[in-house]
Length: 432
Image 1 (tube, rainbow, N blue to C red):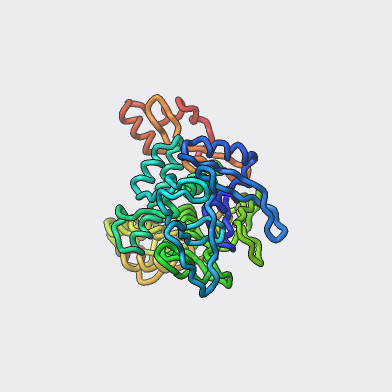
Image 2: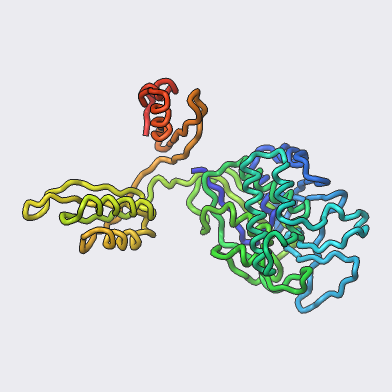
């Protein structure tokens, strides 16, 4: 199974994630050129080599107009008095920042009209207008929705009243869109993320001095394994947290995998440890996985009860449920109910079987299963779209047209399922 592993030992920020994923492509320059020509107003993305603790990786810079945003560190315990014309930053460790922009003032040699605050609807309108795949738009809008919901919760306002600061600027939009485009290009079947290092201490933002992780980041990371560590500063930004939260299928240590490529996305700042996000892409073998088999014998249950029990177990996450006719004691005909489930679901399945059947006990045993990697694609036919299940593994490939689609076409056109399979070239293929 093609798997992407994201190592967040030094947190997560949008530009660092984009830089790391760029290194997984055969031609990063081609991607940068594509990103620079999708129509983000005033945005130019550049990449360069960067070395941290002797490790070479990629650093991405996003320019809006002629300037790149800079961050300003805060010494512990020191509050800096700012002038009216100064930009106030929530300082992220990567150099990507949370900003309160002073409007209509020429700072760093340019006017920051590009950085005016935007609400969620305005950002979504921009994303919908871009010439990018629909899936990329959906992912980017979902990420901004996570950030908007977090900001609304933290500030006690409806999400439509939230105006983004860091995440509303064009440089952050470029980060989010760039990462979503890269994930779409790499197309991993599974994304696993390490526990997230958030950093510790305090961070300066437009509202004052806040704890790390910043409240919005902390809200987004609810349910995600994360830790503070000894490094003083913000290692995980709200943008990085939302990207990770949206794309991660699971969190944990790096699995056994055959690695194809490794990418290093570098931040700007220097620490005693390498300031980078590291990514791995390769294959993991989940074809040999442990499952639990739960079974019981039933001779005093109605057909209605048994049918309902099977439906309920499947709805609640059982991998498979089936019954076998058996002969029980006193010559009674009965059924053996068998439920297959993941180890983590064993207790829940046992409870459901005891609740919905007449048995007084169940038997549980560990099993190993070998499975092929499976996914669903859609093909166009003269009768409309038809889904096809594709499976591969152990040197074998199989395909199967989805029964529900075949049945619909057969009913609508007076054909047999065999006729439709033959027309689509699947009549003699090995199926699943």
